Structure formats: C-alpha cells, structure tokens
Amino acid sequence: MYSEKVKAYGSVRKMAITGMLAAISILLGSTPLGFIPIGPTKATIMHLPVIIGSIMEGPLVGISIGLIFGIFSMIQAVMAPTVTSFVFLNPLVAVLPRVLIGLTAYYSYKATKSSSVSAAVGTLTNTVGVLGMIYLIYGAQFAEALGQDKSKAAALILGIATANGVPEIIVAILVVSAVIVALKRAKKV
Image (cartoon, rainbow, N blue to C red; front, side, top):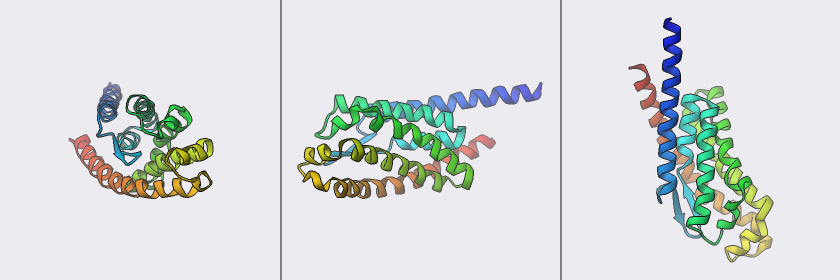
C-alpha cells in the first residue's frame, strides 16, 4: 500500500512539474521574454524549462516541453516575423532540435550527474541543431535574407552560433543549476 502511494505521489508530482514548466514555456513563448530580438535574429531562454524538465522528470517530460518550445518558434515566425522567420516555418528547424533537447539534456545528466553539463549540452543541442538545419536547408537563402553574400553562409551561421550560443550556455548553466538545487531541496521536504 505504501509503494502505491509513493507511485501515485510520483505521478502527481511529475504531472505538476510538467504542467508548471509547460506553463512557463507558454508564458515565455507568448511574450518577448522567450525570444529576445538581437538584430534580425532572436536569442532564447525557452530551452531552460526543457532542460529542467528533462533533469527532474526524464526525457518524455523534456520532449513534451521541447515540443511546446518548437511550436512557439513556428508561431513566432508567423506572429512576429523578422527577415529570417521563413526558416522557422519548417518543423525540421523549429521543432526537431527543440524536441531533441529533452533527450540530450536527460542523457547527459544521467551520465554525469551534473546539471551544468546537462545545461550546456541541452543548449548546444538547440543552437547547433537549429543553426545546423538552417545551414543544411536554407544556407544561401538565410545569408541573402541578412544581406550577406550567400557563399559566406557557413561563416555567418557560425558567427551567430558564437554570438548567441555562448551567452545562452552561460545563462543556462547559471539558471538550470540554481533551479535544480532548489527543486531537489523542495523534493526532500
């Protein structure tokens, strides 16, 4: 009987954490907080709930929250377009990398037990996944949309990866580590 109560508590807790992180993702996706304009591109913090959900509740929770992130990327491309928004209408660019954050963040945490490593890996999955897909599918068009020589698409995308990716990794490590510590303390209470 005790083990049934523990299982039920775990299930309720998982649903509550998933709901809370999904709500945070929806809030971030619905406001400028989630997609921060930096010139013609946007930086993001929407990968943070995905990473936190993966660490705390496993890959399925991370995948679910990543799906919300990806869908909001597509919605942003329609509702608040920039010159490069056309690339985010493709689910291979907007959704797939965001779903994969849930897997890479979970398994890197499982392997290392480090929320910092998981935060960095999850962030890199987003940055490399999105920009890699942009390069593979739209490289020349993306460069032209930004007013650059299409033959320099790789250098342009690498520059964006560095300019956006490094600060996103630093923020992810700081925020995810602090939130995981707090959630684990609350879990013990």
